Length: 478
Image 1 (cartoon, rainbow, N blue to C red):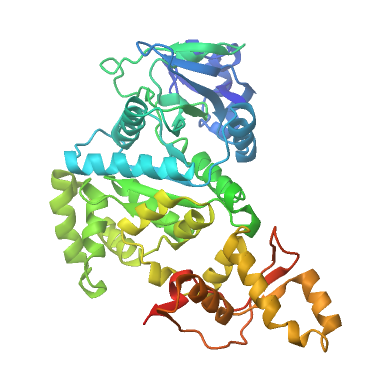
Image 2: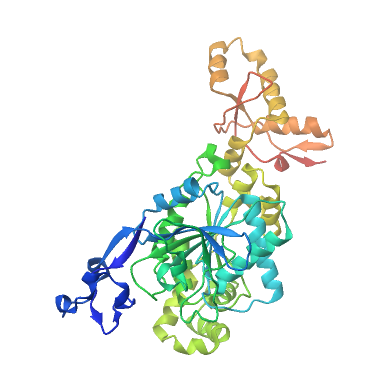
């Protein structure tokens, strides 16, 4: 990993075009005669050197609480960053990635909204083993995430540490000199000086890990956005540990609080990539504009309607938006479209996360809608571990076909190696056998097939499910 230093910057008085004072540059960069008339170009006038800011970070006044940090270049490979997180910093790979975005400035959340956000975020992170990624500074939505992590740490020691990764711009960090030492800092004692930060920002003291993205400039916000996006995309392509058998990759969800035009672009691009976005209604500005518009028929989401919503939720800030921006916003809001959380339900069921399942059901996920797709049901059965029910089911199929095995002896031996076939009729009969005759089978014999292989521990028969369904749909009460 590298730092970026300006070596050919056009110096004007005491401040370089990169934003740093000229006394912070190497000798070659303070020769104005060599660069007269040149336009400053980051790609031409900056080069990389080995990073000199990495190690452990300790926030003053917080005892032994430490985190990990590293200063990295904007063009660092996301694969290298993932290796840093998992191999060097020893983080367990996530089963879910929660990307939190929104207002970067401090904003007020009503107590009810704040408590709902804190509880929901932490509960999801705990029950899924998620990583939370934010901008990492002690302001706005990042501060709210940090407070949620802090409150959880203070109230409970039962669950493991919540992983909150801050991806921030190196050039906007206040007191960043405390993090610099060529041999690394173990730890670096970072002073939080909110009053003296000016237009810079302090790191949030409740995040656990920091990736500090450097493009060689000072005071420019948003430098980290592109690398953060590439890192999230890289993580989303990894195979989730507890659903690895199905080849399902790590799911990503974008959580939005407050926010302005930049946040809308983030939401829009995320949804174009198929990433579900959870909008916290009541958190303000763009989050509330989208939440209100989403509750209306598409025909009513007009330019006039968006004008009214923006005037309501942005206040005086609304007057700064030109008409073209309003039209663009209207188009994006109309194109948002709904996304479901069925992928999360699938992961929670396969990963045996009952608390996460309950959370999804409490927040509107319909089990009936989730189970309508036969492919989903098939995949669920493919992931089911060996258990008493499947053992009984395999034996039932074996008994039902015993009379036919003489005529199909060779075929059956092949099926025993590849997996016996089971229909929903067999499943329904076995459920009725276990629960009693007060249930009525609802599945007639079926010839629809779905491949599914599993070996039971107490039987030599391997099974393949035909047209599978979920237990609750195998029978009905008489």
